[in-house]
Length: 417
Image (cartoon, rainbow, N blue to C red; front, side):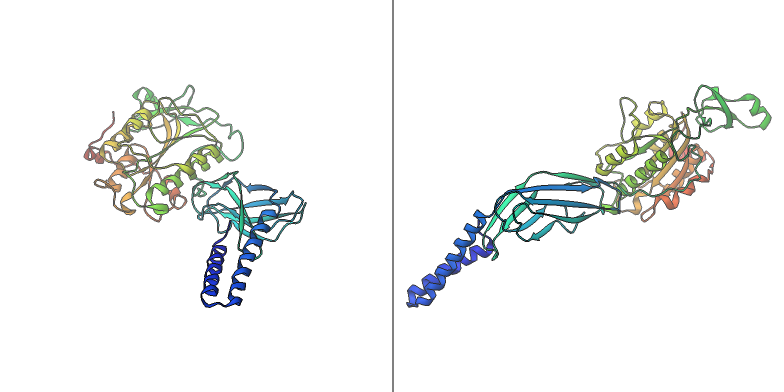
């Protein structure tokens, strides 16, 4: 097969031949013949050169944290009995993760091999194909080419940004396998562990009347948690409630928050489940690697409301332990359902995204301040993220558990069950 240069030489040879015939210049005809001979020799050379190549690609690692680097190694060996032509190696890789992937190599003698490398840069979350790889055998003048295709395709997964979250939130557990082997208080369980102040929505059957009479305010019993702490992360992936485009959108910030929380809780021996929509049965606990694989490729969904999911949470169908909600500031209906949800969870954390700061979103934007006040009145720990914020910089806000007056809840139209 001729290259663009080879096709140009064919045209030039034809033109030279016509000029020689028109003006009777023998030297021009000889030049035309010489060009044609060069083309024929180039084609024969590329056809006779060895095309028996053993090609292997190695990707390390196949999973990358955001902003990390990886590498790809390509090994080529001439397993034929003749030398190869000049080799042009092209590995098809998305430009978003590498600037390499193309090499020009000298001819390989029989039995000889060569290795080439290029780097991967984790600049965007996702699952990216690497390959197929093509090797082009070219003559020294670049006139003819013979292309060999090696169809194997590898994949590399790039996680969303994972920020190191500081300690301080009373979650329980610690680094290392097995947890701290100490009882942890929960809102529901089998063994009595302690008491805490009543929060609107708590089961009145849990009121500890003796402590209530002693302290002069409602106190409820907390039961002992299982030795393996549990956590549920709720991520709002609805397209209509997010704003912005690309890496700076509120959706990408929400995904990064979910990845950071999952990694943080898993490192503290928590069994973590990620929930993005109503479920028929409680989703299984998954290792953080599996969850981050899922978050690497997650996309916005076309859904109308999260109220059915919050109803499942309030009915105890999702789980218990720690509840982390990562959602744009909810409207009145969702806020009411969210306030009533999570009574079976010992700790409830709400990471609210002020989507209005990321761009225009459909519908009226709820008031973050009133929403925060209503959730805190219901026992949630709340922080609000705006465009440019990072969760690791705002995580300590969740340490301060400020309870607000219940009045704002009535103004939003919601209320406890």
